[in-house]
Length: 123
Image (tube, rainbow, N blue to C red; front, side, top):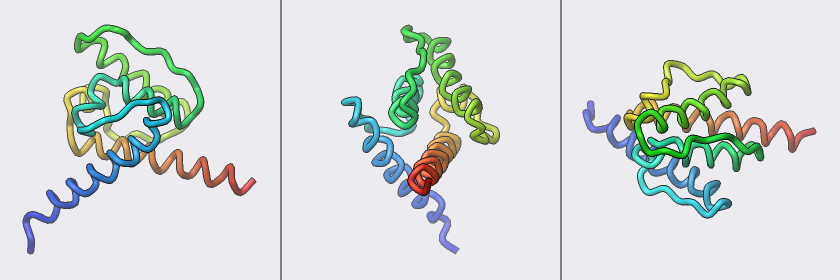
């Protein structure tokens, strides 16, 4: 059994998800380089959700941990309001740059917004 397989899968997922996020963020002239680092303050996450939903979200302006946690929480609350199931993903997981949970969050966002898009195109 190859012990490196999960690492390779995570690396490929990270690269793929980063491209997907950037494809949407370019609409608001933003770009991320590192999925885990660049979502930690919540600003890019909020921008991504704004682009995907067309809804303007509030955000905290400060740079302290408290502000970062608040911004990520704004994004998570927005998803919960839209009945997006977030299993065991908390604001501090994303603010602390947890790789597994950041990938999980982005995958959940991709699934939700692709599904919404497909449902709209069918009606």
